[in-house]
Length: 462
Image 1 (cartoon, helix red, strand yellow):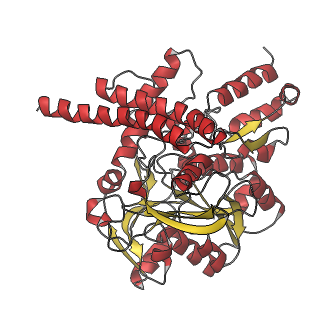
Image 2 (image 1 turned 180 degrees about the vertical axis):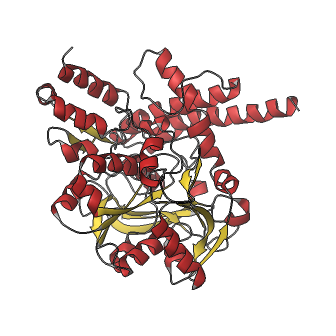
Image 3 (image 1 turned 45 degrees about the vertical axis):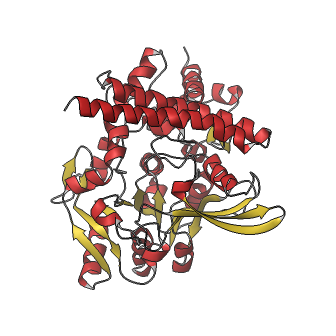
């Protein structure tokens, strides 16, 4: 089989099995491959057969080497090249490389109150800007386009950076903004999820200009990526129909409530009038992260929890001793000495309030994430292999060693991931939210029943 025919088959297999994270990396290096939002609200690559047939061997190799699923690369190899030679750096199979570990928040200014958790993302970017280390920040901002709420953009002032604070559970792609960086000299920081940072590192290995201009990668911890329909359905439950949502704050902090008891704030048209609605997340259907409503399927085939190729990783401190504080706290995994010095200066000048912790605290803060992403990936790979479906090479090998009840939970999560987008699309077509809520509630009830059964089984085996 010709190299182009082999690649075309792999390309079609990846798209058919939803292995695509939708970063836009391929569209950066090859104009023959476009990236667009599909009817399910997920970014997908598109390419004509003739375009794939006419790819040269060099082009194919470049595409393979920029995709984590198609190369022999993994986060260990990439991060070793980035951080392996840093003096006194440590390595852990779950955390990746790290120099120091913290939990805490920013005391200075309004960074904490304006952020989703402890305010460290915006504060670190501000410090980089004030120290003239960067000229701009590549991060997710509100979109000026009518067909999407958020997109990657470039901020060049601290005010612009602050306006882009807070977590967005929404799909984005960075092909346009990375092309702009390649055309615009300067030094930049980027903020992104694991797949975005890792594929940017792979792009940078092939493009020395990009490698030179991206000075710092700020990585976020994220349980899984969402489609646009997640935001849309949350708003629909608040009375804002699909197509009428204008803005959404996914993480509105609630005074005197634990940090994990947050709300959403949505603005849009209701009966022709613009209204803003605030609802507690716990009162909305589809909120349970474990169920995975509107999850991008590729998220089930990553083994990187802690954004291992980022210079610094930030996440929510989902720990009882910290969630009691409604203002929020971050976990912080530092790898780059420059970030280390910024945090040390912040401690010295009392700009931040952090606890130095060991790796067990960081891992415990994301315990359920590790269980699904790290411990149970082997079973998901095993199932795909048993179905004779091509699977990407991961650091976890396919295996069938899970307990019966954990297999059933994984099976139900897969069913929810596959069925929910189809049910929702039908509900939108019929303008019938009750249809979706009733049908998907059956899936939710089945999921919860498995956890009830798990609890009973645990008691019986004591």
